[in-house]
Image 1: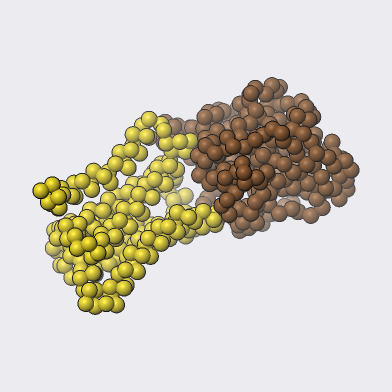
Image 2: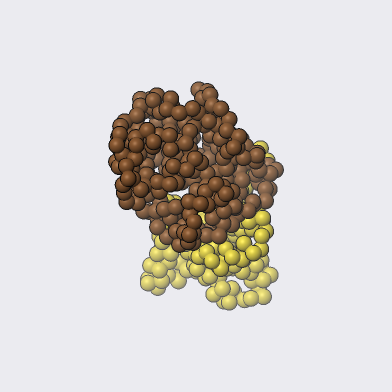
Length: 214
Length: 271
């Protein structure tokens, strides 16, 4: 009975909403209490960026999880986690532009054209923005499921770009442990999909994606 | 412990001193971990007594100084310096120490002494960060002789009226306010006078990003970020959440004092 309750898409989705909102609530509470450390802007930038990556990877893990366990009820979480990943990415970009660079447009623009890691990050964010904008059900309807599906394969470009953005930032300081662990998880998640593609019998089910909800 | 010193008003910036709670919890001291909160948590394991500093190389009177002797070598001054990290944040700190030139003169450099090389302690027993190969240990820094003899180059033993906390480079470090913070080497155990330019840790690790001089210069960007502006820690509402960035000054505002050292030098090439 209790288990069935959990398997209700609504219940599960709400639970995930609460869970993935917790880091933001925690950061806001710490910010108001002036407990984000000596450089609160940097802390917020790092934290929102990390949560964006973690949630995007989690979103990519939903389909493999469903494949592996046969839990059809987790399918809607792919969208929920993806949208929350986008939300954290949007906060990350806002904090960078407004709090960190004080909206100095000349500096922002110079950053964008001169710094590869900023370019990579903005490319990832632009793709995610398109995906988020085409996520509401009525947009999906207007696009048509087939086109939506093709468009949303861009996530397989956006997430690697985001991981590369983080890796590039840390690269020359030899602080690669965390970016490489994200890259490893991403490698497994994308590798699974390639593997499914090569086995057409299961591949069809493995890459089955349908817009919003299910 | 308190460290008595006479305030040197010639070298006391009038800018607001940064709260010591920020300066002691936000440190780059990779020997204790790469996160900026790591040194404050892990540097308690550093034993600062007994401590000695070997001063050797191109000089007439090389010797090993016990820390107790170094504390007595010259009168302690308090200087309030601006301190600008290469990562584009800055603080204002009242340091306590005396010019490095006092120590160097004591060993009588010879005519071949063109550079000064410094080394940080590298003891895996006390420094958990050494297990990770982020840099080629021990940490090394260096100065040209005329830079080392400049009166701004402070051999530092204390801050905020007290002896240095471990995470700030106890018991003895350099402070070079016109250079990026990583030049101000911490927890020094060896000083060597050399004829050739010595290797330095960050320059070895990423020569495109970190030069030997590493003078603060808003016109020369780090390859991955701009150096035109900086964030002063603790400034602004909510602990610095809404502070506008400050413009970075050439030589961190000490141009008048140090630009003579670099006359005729292309600062873009020799960054």
